[in-house]
Amino acid sequence: MTDRQIIHGRLQEAALKITDNFCYSCYKVVEGQYCPDCRTDDFMRHLSGVGVEYGTEWVIEHLLTTRLTPVDGEEMFEELLDECYPEVKIGEIVYSVSQVLKKMDPLYFQMGASENLQHLADDGVLYEYGGEYYQMSDLEEMLDNIESA
Image (cartoon, rainbow, N blue to C red; front, side, top):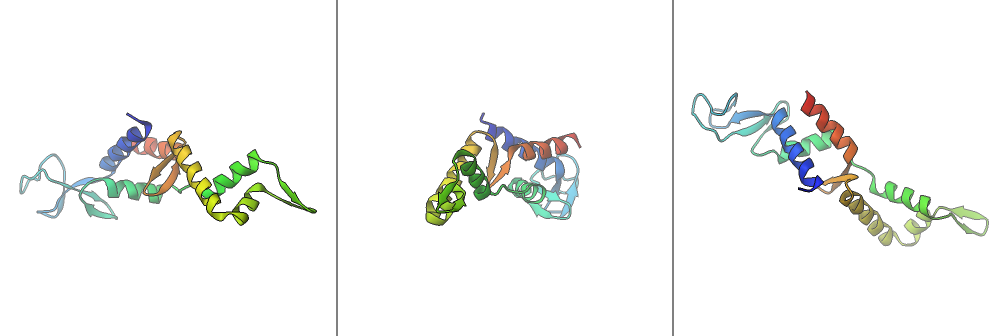
């Protein structure tokens, strides 16, 4: 199993922990494995104050978007460039490499920022979900708090 699969599994477990079984036929929250009225075991997930839906993906999305802040990929790439390369001097004016690249070739800058995010996700520093990237350390802290509650 990859780190991403492990984290996604933990997210699914957290989603199950913070939600309740909901019987759509009887339209009520149910405790246990079966609805006491209709005996179904085909439950939706109920998240108090948010809603009801089948599956856990919507709960995971809710967790990530309400409890974590996505990273700013451009800012991270700017910091990387500025740490790796010296400033550029044109006449008497000094520019950071990130400023120059962003102004001179914005498409390449965007590509570089995207590739940087993907590499950080591949290295387990970031977690990608729904096109957004989150710090793995923040995500693990959130999951630890849910698991210990």
